[in-house]
Length: 357
Image (cartoon, rainbow, N blue to C red; front, side, top):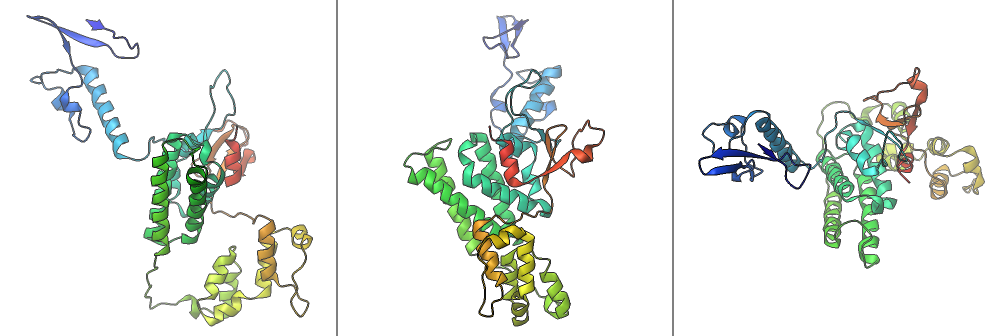
């Protein structure tokens, strides 16, 4: 005989008739209290068990038990099979509410995206922009997810020794923002307890210390090295670099690379790649003693006034027909007859703008 409790969402109680009268069957006894204890389906359905669970209710309880155990043992709150999200800006008859930045973290699976070398820089740049301006707009769950993914990013850099400079800049911006919001203002404007944010700030400082002490292992190779290549080939490789600091750091390796990294044509090509012709000549040209343009100094001068051109191995894409944001390799359920013409690459800044309401 079922009996519904005060909460209409509850499955109700099940009563058994005994010699002493009606007795309620308890589903969740002390055996289910410990989340770290594995309980098999056969054990729950054992005939000798005092609290008998039968049929579909037993199977349902086991599924809920495994789901709770999974959520407690993993830092990611959700696991979605479809790696896309519908971006809607307001309520309609079909959809209610808004799409949030925290929801996009889960649905687009940034935890797996950082393992892809093509997407790593994109996610890192996105997290840097969020650290600068969007921390106060994140919900509590989104904040937790943000720092969980950030921890995985730092672990990847420490383990694989890749992109340490990019992550140092990210942590520096995040540390400055948290310091101004928690310490500088006197009262935190962030969601959550002040002590939690102070602990996170301490964790960030610890990460910065680990990255500062990061030492690259010396690779021993008996094969052909970069210095063994012909000068023409080394110079051609340098022309493929789009980051000025990578060129400078490579030039510090050997005297030959130092000469190649100071090539005027190389820095002119870099200026033309990152800045438009109007931007290059809007500022006063930096001239050397021989009245030639110092393109290296020109690059760093232009960098102060204009943003550099962004380049990523893989980016998120937005379908203008379906209003869906997704990774191109994962695809999305498009209803357009010509889906390729509806796609638009989304930069990290454009990604944030999509979720500003």
